[in-house]
Image (cartoon, rainbow, N blue to C red; front, side, top):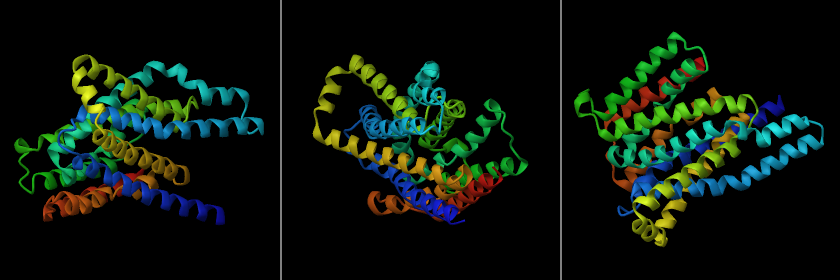
Amino acid sequence: MVKNKKALEKGLVFGIIASLLIGLQPIVANARPEFIDPYVFSILTLFFEAVIFFPIMLIQGYLYKAKYENNVISKEELESFLNGYKHNKLRLFYVGITFGVGQILFFIGYTLAGSINGALAQKSTIFFSLLFSYLILNEKITKIQIIFSTFLFFGLILAVTQGTFNLLELNMGVIVLLFLASIWMLAHTLTKPIFNRKEGYPSQIVFIRNIIGAIILFFIFLILFPVELITMLSNPIVIFWGFLMGGTYGIGLYFWYNTLKYLDVAKANILVSPTPIVTTIFASIFLGEIFTIFHLIGMVIVIVSIIIIMKEK
C-alpha cells in the first residue's frame, strides 16, 4: 500500500511538471524571433532533443546490463532490449522522417493558429490514438469513446471558430495541427509493437527518431539552401532558441515517460489533459493572445471529453 502510494505521488509530481513543460512548448515556438524559419528551428529542436536523450539512453542501457548481471533478465532479453531496434530499421526510418516533417508542421501550425487554438487542436491526438489503435493494433473502441470523441471535436470547433461553426473559415494552422496529430499518432502506433516485443526502450527510440529526423532535414536544407543554413547556424541567437525549444520539448518528454513509469496510460493522459490551460495562461501573459468565453467553453468540453475517453480506456 505504501509502495503504491509512493508510486502515485511520484507519478503526480512527474505529471504536473510534464504538463507545465508541454504547455510551454507552443509559447517558446511562437516567441522565437521571426527571422528564425521553421525548417532550421526544426533541425535544432530535433538535434537538441537527441542530445538530451543520448545520456539517458546510455544510462538506461547500463541499467539493463545490470539487470542481466543480477539474473533479472536473460541474455536474449538484454540483446533484444539493446539491439532489437536493428530489426526495425525501415519502421524507425519512417518514424524519423515523420517526426522530422512533423516538427516543421508543428511550428508552421502554431504560427498560423496561435498558441491557444493550437494547443486545443493538438488534443485531437487522443482521437487519432483510438483510431489507429483500432485499425492497426486491433484494440477495441467503446461507444462512450466514440460519443466523447465527437464532443471533443465539437468543443474544438466551438473554440477555434469562436462559436460561428463556419468550417469554411477554419484557421489553416488548426488544419495543419490536426493533420500533424494524425501522422504523429500513426508513428506512435507503429512504434508501440517495438516496445511490446521488447526490441527497444523509450529513450533509445526517442534518440533514434530525433537524430534521424535532424540528419534528414539538415541535408535537405543543405542541398537546397546552403548559404541560408550556414548563416542561420552561425547565429548564436538561432542556436539559443533552438536549444531552448529542444530543451523544453526533450525535458518535457523525459518527465512524461517518467509519469508513465509510475502511472498507467489512462491516468497519465488524464493528468496532462489540462495542458491547454497552461498554454492559455502563458500565451495571455507573454504573447498577448486574447482568451475568450468560447475558448473557455471549448476547453472545458475538450478536457472533460479526454478524461472520459481515457477512463474508458
